Amino acid sequence: MQRMGMVIGLAPEKVEEYKALHAAVWPEILDLISRCNISNYSIFLREPENLLFGYWEYHGADFAVDMAKMAAAEKNQEWWSYCIPCLRPFATRKDGEWWASMDEVFHLD
Image 1 (cartoon, rainbow, N blue to C red):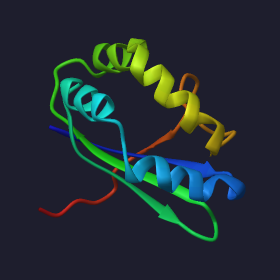
Image 2: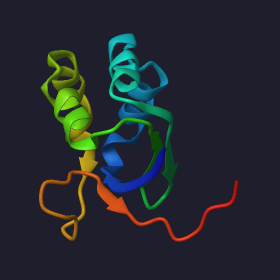
Image 3: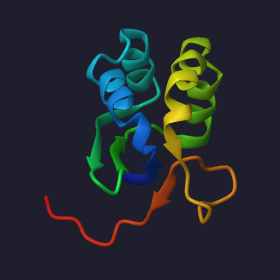
Image 4: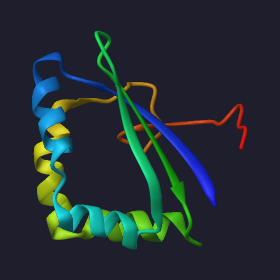
């Protein structure tokens, strides 16, 4: 199992829309996340800075393959069409990232 953290900005005018979307995530998206070997997934919002922090645990064998499967899913592309306009990615993110990945510096079970 691999713990993963990520961060991105949220447009101030989109905060309520983003909250509403995630208060009722489509069942197909929840199922897809699980089928892509992700569990214990949370997104936190820090206001008024409007920073989103995401955390999940990856239980698969090939993260790139699972993320390609997620990206290719038609329903997920539709979901992203609502979510992506809300987000403000960091200029310092790595090539190919939307949310900026974070390095784990501490963990306690």
